[in-house]
Amino acid sequence: MAVRSKVLNVRTTEDEYNEIKNFAAFQGLSVTDFVIESVLERIEDWNDVQAVREYEKEKAEGHVGSISWGQVQAELDLS
Image (cartoon, rainbow, N blue to C red; front, side, top):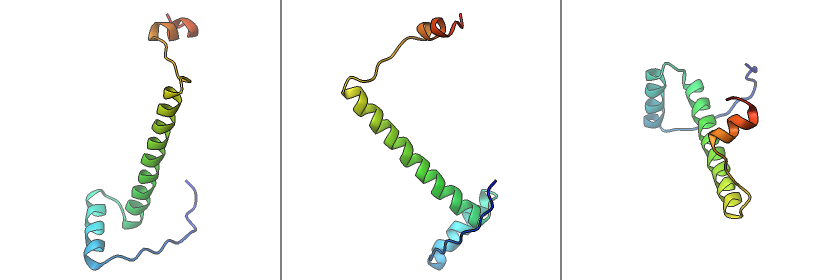
């Protein structure tokens, strides 16, 4: 794991902080780890949405095809 060397300051209300702290504790995480995991998960979700959009665009343009599992097995000689 990479060494964490950057500091990110986030301002919250007391209520927001307590909610974050309590939920992090429920998950067995520190507030820092919980916030980092949450932000990175949100970025990953966004990247997934972008990949689906790109796939759907390519499919609409006729650049995407499919083959059956049998064809995959035959091409990879998995039968």
